[in-house]
Amino acid sequence: WSKDFFDALADYFQHASILSLAARYGSYTALFVLVIVCNNWLKKKLIIRCRIEMTHKFEQAWLARSAHYRLSLRGEPDNPDQRIAEDIRLLIEQSLELLLSLLQNITYFFSFIVILWRLSGVQTFSIGGHSVTIYGYLVWIALGYALVSSIFAHIFGHRLHALNVEKQRAEADYRTTLLRVRENTEQIALYQGENAEQTRMQQRFQSIVNNWRRLMSQEFRLETFTTSYFRLGLMIPVFAVLPVYLTHQISLGAIMQARAAFGYVLDAFGWFVDSYRQLVAWSATIERLWTFQQNLHQLPTP
Image 1 (cartoon, rainbow, N blue to C red):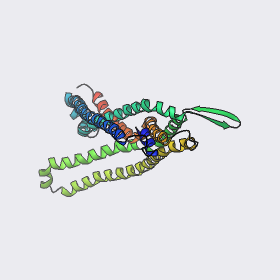
Image 2: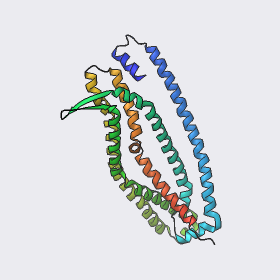
Image 3: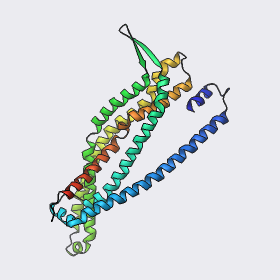
Image 4: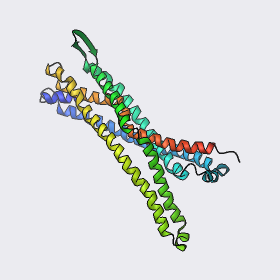
């Protein structure tokens, strides 16, 4: 549709119908809305079903054979209540989100790589007196750009995993401290322990603040890179096909079509870059639940 629209726009709609193009766009939009709404509904239904199943299993394992008491004596892992109440939900939501985005990008890849390959055509270059022929050069540009960007994304963001694990622990520790005050209000008031409790709360909250500042620093570096990656990705296909356009081998509509197809193919190749922050948070959640499960399994039989 975009190719037909921009070709018609370049031709001042002398040989194309605005109503026909608008009708096509309307039908595409209606289909798009239907798919998005149904997808979100099914995703929410799947999330709650998976959460019910996982929560039930972890609750049983935690309460079986007084495991909750024996774990508390060992002091490991920290905040099992938070791992059951929050980490399970995060794991399911993050896993499903990543899986759906991966499947969506795979679909886009197979839908648009043929278009991008065809628009790239065959380009011949002379290097050192030798003739070099490249087929589908836009596809190779997208692949190379995504691979190099993935390496840099990991360089800039690899420390986020440990910081996300620390973040979840600090938040849970602070929440536990507040809960302790609520459950022991009478004793605290009787012994006038408010100052001691406030000091403890401030210490716990300071851990959150310190972690947040370190996260800000690391995410600033990663976001600077990923934002630059996205902005450059918008113009790379335009400049790549500009020489062909200037020789009148392709139309303006073909350039816009190549830009759109390049974007979808680049999204597929660059899924790791696009999803890096989500992958880091996901891996941190997995680590916390895995540690909890391992501690439950390692308890000796009473």
